[in-house]
Amino acid sequence: MAEALIQLDPNLFMTAVRGGSVATHGNLHELYGVTHITKSMKIYKSGRRFGFLIYAIRAALGAKWRGVDVVLTRSIVIGAITAWLGIKTILECHAPPQGREHLFWLALLRSGNFSKLVLISNKLREIIQDHYPDIKQLDVVVAHDGVDLARFQNLPNAKTAKLNAGRDLNRRIAGYAGHLYAGRGIEVLFDCAEALPDWDFVIAGGTETDIERHRNEIRRRKISNIEFWGFVPNAHLAEKLSVADVLLMPYQKRVSISSGTLNTSQWMSPLKMFEYMAMKRAIIASDLPVLREVLNEKNAILVEPDKVNDWVSALQKLEQEDSRLPLVNSAQRTVSQYDWQKRANLIMGN
Image 1 (cartoon, one colour):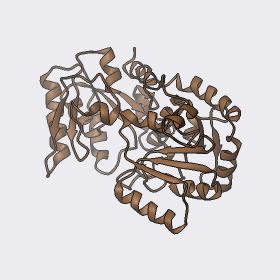
Image 2 (cartoon, helix red, strand yellow; image 1 turned 180 degrees about the horizontal axis):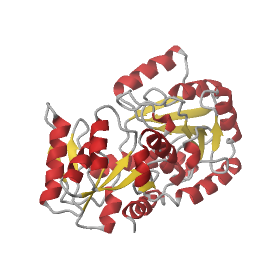
Image 3 (tube, rainbow, N blue to C red; image 1 turned 90 degrees about the vertical axis):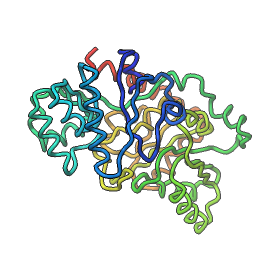
Image 4 (cartoon, one colour; image 1 turned 45 degrees about the vertical axis):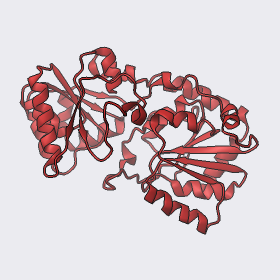
């Protein structure tokens, strides 16, 4: 998103906080696949006590000192501070306010400088509006997550990718990319692999602890057609995952994030959904209402999250390339609407 905003304003000032997964000027391409990040990006260290609050204050004061016209932030804390410093503030929300964020939310609402609220799904808009009817007075924009379409233009097809990787062309491959947190449906993949021994299942992502736990499970069940790739840098993920004939999104009705405290299945806008579509691969996804804001029966196969037999049947339907092409072509038309640059223009009102 920052990369897209730079195309609108080369003088964009961006801040980031140095946390557990350290982002630096040098490794942003490797971690996120971006190539045009402003050199003026300021990375602040997070202290042990009140770390994020200190970062928020420093970032807000940095924006004030530079005389910026508008702040776009995903932090309610930063948004409240910049708004009270007299800066027009756009807040992008990926979840309803949680815990103490409620106080900063009220401060932001009362500041007089709450310029715009950006939400990642219509479902999230409904949820927040139920709790905070005052947002009806705001300029509210629904902007689903997006994808850098240019990065996916020259990917090999599945057959070529398999040849390049030295894989058996006769075996179909189902792929998954993402975390292995609770609710991501990894157990569904295991059941499908057990039911479809002629398929291979490749999984990119997950911590070493989670991967080892799942490896122990498939050893116990004597499932031999699952591969764990571990973390793959985003810059290389699409090319590595190109060996897949089908890509899977087996989200369950309760989906956790890293903190394990939020159920995001009601309002999420998964990055993988847009990257999957851009990869020109058939998609099988859980039939969740929020995913239907983007997916439908023309661009994906949608199945009940926990009905393993339906997942197995969907994979069997997509064994032949001819059965996958209509979904792929429709998904290409859909994803063309979700380029990061279009999203940046939508949010900034261009």
